[in-house]
Length: 175
Image (cartoon, rainbow, N blue to C red; front, top):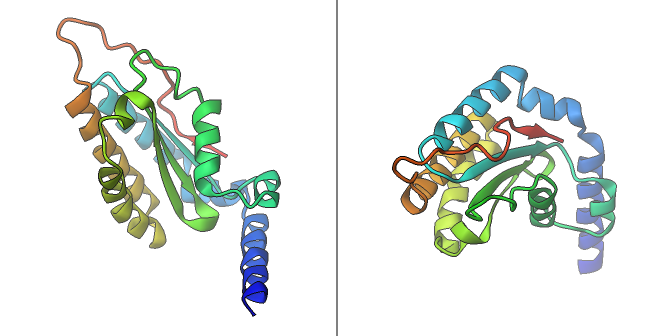
């Protein structure tokens, strides 16, 4: 019986991921929202010397589904692919949203992650999950951005008199 339940769950997950495509991502995150999010990232980064990227995708690639990989595994891979790890102070953060599972993952580089407890990260993700479950993607992403910004401001304020270099693009990436 348990094996049948696992098979049904796996099949349901596979179908959900195969059903959703980039048109679903663009519907959830239209061009106007992309622009607003890019402006919010830029405004956030003016207050600290960290870097924030947002990545939203409709579904996992088939290779991830075949391995039964989690949203976390994909988020970590995108963290590397988008070079979020490659910042001067090791304080880049990826906010990752997977629409097929309404999953949110925050991946922070070692400079910030070493200063933030797992409980703090969970406290940030919980209300975002509620917003995403209700289809309020802008609210959830804005809240995530504000929460991550507050952590970066607390741990990586800009150095007085030093230029704050924008190391990574501010525009969200849609997959």
